[in-house]
Length: 363
Image: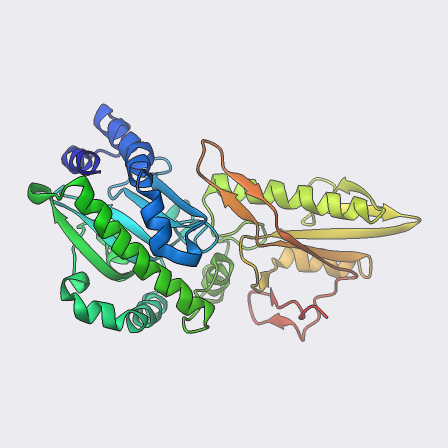
């Protein structure tokens, strides 16, 4: 790990948003070589995480298009943090100047909107971080150095990473520890992460709103056209496309298993599928999401289409879709299906301005 981190810091000093040879090498280190080096200590990290270590994963990112100023490599429970925008995890961050690396225990601090990663609201992050520090109060008191402030020098995105940290350890480029030292620290942070997850299980941690909720709040704040009216909101384009395709495939298979003949809705319509069975017809709106429970944002065109087609309407939810982003392609898998038919989003379940529909509890 020492060699990989040292080289990443050297390459940080040659930063370019373009895929220069230096940035291509940095990407290989961040995405492949450092995760592989980290996972050579997998057994130790799994033991430290305890009940949450069986699905341990390591991954890195250095930008979806242009090269990121602040790359990262993280290790995490796949179930608890299916993406770096969700849940708690441990992450190696590299400052913009290439002067230091940091190991941080943090919560996902960004969401994807309008082609860029944007910080979550500061008040939301402050609540999450305060709760995390309360859970780890004894550990942080025993090791005051774990609460040191740090400065990544990466603008607003860097500040969002800094503000999401419950604990962090700094590694100056001129004084990096040995591989054994890095692994010892990783095990310590994995144990802290396990305590955070245990607190979540006990209901002692506040949940973070899923991406869909942030989009609804954006619309309510008067920022139209940002994610409403589609599936897989709040995700990067490739992940969103995977969720959309998976949601439609799952919806179609579910309806066909119930005896419906299913076709795509005519081009230009805001709904997704048309299903027919023994003279009956359903116009189906599909919503797929990585969230397991969240209000469903409905666009005005969708509301109008549903109103015009009553009562031959349905809302089909595919929730808890899992994303596998470890390979070259993003894969969407599984998900819990719920069919609401006929679907009439009556005013008692619509919320103002953004037409946010709160599905009734399953009964």
